[in-house]
Length: 387
Image (cartoon, rainbow, N blue to C red):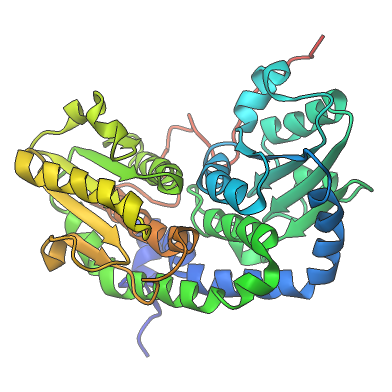
């Protein structure tokens, strides 16, 4: 009987290459999104009982926080949740909150601190909560974590808190966060959008994500073999956060061997565009919003006219971006969907590219940094006492 395959490679081969967990965790995302929604629905009454009174508070401020990839989940969600809820929703990394708490926390403003954490053991994550408790008079905690045993999980279990524990499989064992990122982001989107609302949307999201994996694994594998030295990810509004996460995945899994950059299509012209040369791959995330997409399209047309980049790829749920089929990652079934739904199928192509680039460089994707200068759970952070 043939071996099980992940991302087109047999698991026995992936284990030999040191990439089994990364491949599994990328591939499991459609199933984990469904499982996360199922878990949330089972706790619907408890979640709504916690959130509804908070969302009724005049002037409630919501801070989405985490470190690294966990922070970028908040960056992807803050603009859409702010518009949806009609209140301040800000993405502020724990790494910012901890080093300058008086610039960010507001003592008199009722605040809901939403903390994301794969392990929940990052020193900044715990310190940010402790500082918030000290500096904000009316404070509640929503903890979204993949690790029930992590330090972060305990902070949501008090009288002013709630911990949302995600499926155990999302506690990624690989170095780089993949399914942990998508499922923490999905959980926050669901609890603030309405669990019943997302229950009607999760299947289309999961199917679209699965289709990208099924249809474009070989495309990403081939792209990794093309010898790019620089990779740029571009996205408007919420997709700028996704572009940042995409660049980080590539940086992490190639152990810094590839130069990466993220920006918005409009912002890219203001200096960052000088990075483009004939060894540069540019990936553009297209919005479903017609107005926003017009700016995405303008930049794509400009890049084609310039003809300076080695290759430009569009990730889109819409037809008609004008690229050849090999340069377009088409997301199925979400043409009329909210942009927030696209975050999940959009991220898997960059994750796969990073995985195959890692293999191309002879690295072990599960642990690409062999020197120990970076770790799965950050080390070497000293938290200083706030006077």
